[in-house]
Structures are given as structure tokens and as C-alpha cells.
Amino acid sequence: MSEELILNEINNNTEEYIEFLRELIQTESYNPPGNEKNVALKIQEYLKRAGLNCEIFPFGNNRANLIAHLNEDFEKKNLLYNAHMDVVPPGNEEEWKYPPLSAFIKRKKLLYGRGAADMKSALAAIIISLKILHKLDLKLEGNLLVNAVADEETGGNLGTKWCLENILKPRSIKCDFIVICEPSMLKPLPKAIIFGEKGHMIIKVITNGKSAHSMTPSMGKNAIYMMSKIIENLDKLKKYIPKIEPPFTLEELKILLSKAFPNREILDRILNEQPLLRDVMVSLTEFTNSLNVIKGGIKENVIPDHCEALIDFRLLPGQNSEMILNGLKKLINDIGFEVKDKPLEKPAEEIFVYLEIYNEGASSLWKEYNKSQTVKNLEKIVENVYGREPFYWISMGATDAHFYRNSKYCETTIHFGPGSATQMHAIDEHIEIQDFINAIKVYTLFAYNYLKK
Ligand SMILES: [Zn+2]
Image (cartoon, rainbow, N blue to C red; front, side, top):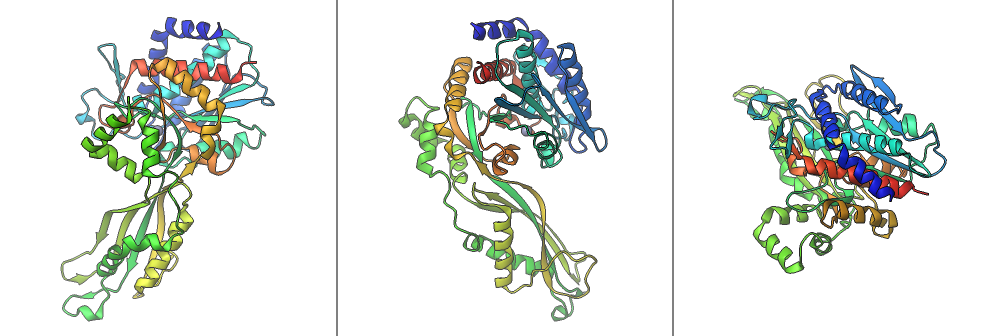
């Protein structure tokens, strides 16, 4: 009965929900610099009209995190929905057919704009689900918390991590289940429920050589040659880090993915025809590295004393940044270079290498997801709403989920949300409006199901 009430409420108010989503997309929150407070204020206004309060935690220059909840009781079950308010900048706006802040609706089906997929649709959907549960005043036992965070696109330390350390933990709020509401579809596959993710770590490697005139190369130490020696040996890094079995073999991944296809033969055929999908699967079983930026040299006849490179390492669940950093240091030592801490000022004529962490997002995994009845309930709700059975998957890239899982605050964290991963950070980013409406249904029904007496 209550489910019907919820679905009727949503079906009768879709226009209003779409308007709220458009308003969020039209509110600029490009990160960098952030400006998430603009979005937080819109959410506050919307919740206020619905009779709900929220707390805004401002910081920096026009930035903020926000938290809202259904009631004041945190002693029973707590379910938390997490979505970020920041979006990546649009790049060259002239390349956009529909301007990034337009929230343009095409043929009543698609909604365009920066954040349409990543992830203002999810953000709007979870705020709306809170509003619906409040309005319908159903008999619930427990609390739904909505955490709208800043800083996700630049690492999450000032967003999800800050909220965890400064709001949830100090107030002794324990969460029993968390949903990271990032897009979890890879079109044309059905929705995925994601229970783990690879991590990334970008390391800047700097070689410090010795400058000289190139008439007398032996008087110098060429920093580019030093770097080239490191690059040549980079593939040996695997031997220098603890051996970690991938959480899933290729065969196990195929079994997970086969749920998205009518049968295994069709999946095998598609994997043969679509190298991209096969590559995605292989990369989910491997630790990889890729050197993507390199800078060095100042003049055609001067031996360079400085060269720097950015290397993107992709970590399997179980691998952490310390392992990679230590392994890389040992490898560089074995090649014959000394690795030192970052010098405070430019050192004169000293030959060594130093490393800096440029950017990182930890890997994480909820191993026991398949034993959880809560997850099975979510699966059923997703199937009913979307009309297609979802499949379970691990993600290629890190979300804020690792802050909850790795700190053991709430290992039972999954990632599910509207939008296709192919739209994330894309030009002319868009969402199917039906996907957005379906997400409102899933989040509201799931919260009701989870918290009902
Ligand atoms: Zn995102």
C-alpha cells in the first residue's frame, strides 16, 4: 500500500522534480574552484518549502557541505545517501551544443547540462526522496540522512571525509547502510549495483641531475636520461609491491556480467566483437601504470638538470598508496639513483630523485555484499522500477565510497545512481529524464523498505 502511495506521489509531481533538477544544473558549482555553497542554498530553500531543515557547513571561498535528515532520532537504523554538489568545469563552452548551465530539455526525453549525469540528477533525487518520505509521513523506524558534499571532483577530503570526521563521528551517528549515488550504468548495459572499486594514485617523479653545456656532456648529469631509465624499468614495479590477487578473476567477472545478457553465449559473442568491454574487464583484474605527462629541458644546447613526469597508477582493492610509493622507491634505488625527500630549495649539483603524490583515490571493496539481504532488496526494487534486472559490478574508478569502507565506518556501502558513466565529464552531458524519475523511485522505495517498521 505504502509503495503505491509513494509511486503515485512521484508520478503526480514529476514536473516539479524536473524543475528542481534544472535549477540545480543552472546553479554553477564548477570545481575548481567549487562554489558548492550556491547549490547548498538552493537545496536548503527547497527543503524549507517542504517543511524540512538542513545544516550547511560553509568553508573556504563560497564552498559548503550540507546534511539533512528525516527526523532527530539516530539511535535506530540509519541509512545515508551521499551525492556531491561540485561538477567538473565545462572546458570550451563553444564545443557545447546545449550550454552547460542551460538545463535544456530535448524532446521531453533528455536533459542537458554540466552535472546532468555526474551527479546533480542523483543529488536532486535523494533530496526529493527525503521530501517525499517527510510528506507522506509513513511509519518508519530509523532515519534517512542525506549528505550533499563538496570537493568530490578534487579528492573528497574537504567533502565526504570532512563530514565523516566532523559531523557523523563526533555526533556518534552510526550508519548501517550507505549509498553513493554516482551514475552506475554503462549504456547499453542495465543498471549496476557496485560494491567495490579500483583506486588511483598519480605520482610526480622528479629527477634532479646536473646542468652543463652540451659540448661537454660528461660534465653534467642529464635529468631526462635519468627519467628515461626509470621509464624503461617501470613495468618491473609489480615485483616490488606485495602480490595481491585481484578480487575477481576474469571468469568471475564474466559470471557477474552475464546477468546483464540473455545468456552466456551472447555475452561471449559481444566480448569478442567489442574489445572495449573486454579491455574494461581485463583492467579490473590488473594493477596498471601509465606515464601521461613529461616535462624537461630548457634549451637545445644545455644538459637538463630537471625532468618531471606524472605517472597514473591504478590500484586493485587491497593495494594502498604506501605499497606503491615504497615499491617505486626501491625500484629507483635498484636502478642506481638515490631517492630523497622533496628538497626545500633547489639543490645545487646533487644527483637524486624525489617523489610527490599528485592526486589519489583509494581502492575499496565490500567483500560480503552477496550475503546481504538489504542488497537483494535493493536489487529487486531496481528491477521493478527499471524493468531490467541489474547486475553486480566493481568500478574502474574511485568514488567517495572508500572513505566509508576503508575507515570501517560503514563497510556496507554500495554505489548506485542515475546516469550513464559514458556521460560523466563529457561535452553535452545529459541524462534521460526517465532515468532521473526512476532514481527518485528507487531511492524513496528503498529507504521506505529499509526503514519501515
Ligand atoms: Zn561524480
